[in-house]
Image: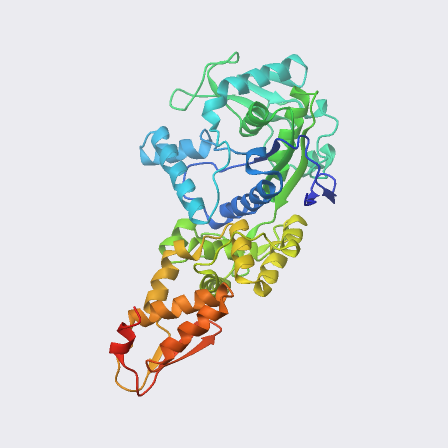
Length: 464
C-alpha cells in the first residue's frame, strides 16, 4: 500500500499518515458561508482537499473514505444579505449553495460524502452546549452562552499562541458579560427579525464555531483522521473547534492531522475589490476560462505555499492541457498511475512535482494520472473538442479549401494509433493519406498536414 505523508499543522512536522480505521478513513473540511458567489480564494481549499480525497480513495478504496464538508447557512452575513435584498434567507442560501456546487463541479471537484447544513444540526449543537455547561467549560450570561477559554489548558496550541498574548493583542471591545476577553460565543440571542431556535437560554442561534464541532462529531465521531481548511481559519475558528470538541467529548481527541492551505493572490497582490482584482469562480468561467485550467493553475503551486493567480499562468495552463488532451484523446486509461507520480502526490500532495513528471509519461499513463488529479478526459472537454474541429492543422498554397473535415478525422485517427503505440496501423494509415497528395508530419501540438500540388479531394473521400 502506498505510504502517504502529510504535514500536520498541530505538530509542525510531516508525518506518515496512519488512519484510525483502515476501513473508514475520515476527513472534515470547513465549507463556505452561503450568501454570495464563491471567490477564487474560496476555491483553493476545495481543489486542495478534493485532490487529497481522490488520493485517499485511490489508496484505501472509494468505499473506505468518508469526506464531510459543511455549509454554513446561518450567519450574520446571510442575515445582512436578506435584509439588504428583501429576499427570504432560505431562498438566498438555497440559491448560493447550488451556485457553489455548480462552480466547484466545473473545477473538477467531487462532491463530498456528506454536505451537512448547519441549520440541520441545531438540536445537536444545543445538546453539545448543554454538555459543556454541565462540565464547567461554558457559562450562560445575558441570553448568551460562552466557552470558558481558561477551562481548556491547551488552548492556543494549534496556532502557537498563548492566551495572555492573545488578550494583550486583542483589539475588540470586550462584552461586559464575558468572564475572559478570549471567551467565545456558543449561542446568542435572536431578535424577532432574525433566524432563531428555542433553547434553554431563550430563542437564539448558534455561534459560528460550534456548528463544525457538532457536525463532525455526528458524522465522523469523537476522533477522526484529518481536518482541513485555509490557514485563515487556524485562529480562531479551528482553535475554538478543538477546545469545545475536546472538552465536550474528552473520550476522543478530535482530529489527528490538521492541514491548512496557504492564501491566494492575484497578479502578485492580495485579492480585493478596491484593487479591482477580485474574481469569483463564476466570473472566470463566464469569461471563458475553463474550469480545468483553473484547477491546473491551483495544482501547479504546492498547497502550503502562497499561490499567485495570473493571466499568464492561465494561458500557459490552457496550452499545456490542450497538448495533453491531444496526446490522450481516445486513449485507453486502464493502465496504472506511474509509481513516481503517485509517490510525489503521496508526499504531502506535491502536485507541482506530479505535473512536471507528467510531461515524460506515455499517453496511457498521462491519461490515468490526469484522471487521478481530477482532470476530465479529452473526449468530454467541450472547448478542446470545439478547438480541435476548427484547427485542421492543414496548410495549402494551391487553392484547395482548408476545410477538410475528413482529413482532420483521419489525422486524429493517425494520432490515436501513435498514442496507443500501434505503429503498424499508424504507418499504414499515413501511407494512405499521403497517397492522395497530403504530406503528414507529427508536430509538438499534434499532427500537421500540407496539401501538395497533386492533392485529390476525390481520392480523400475514398478513404472514408
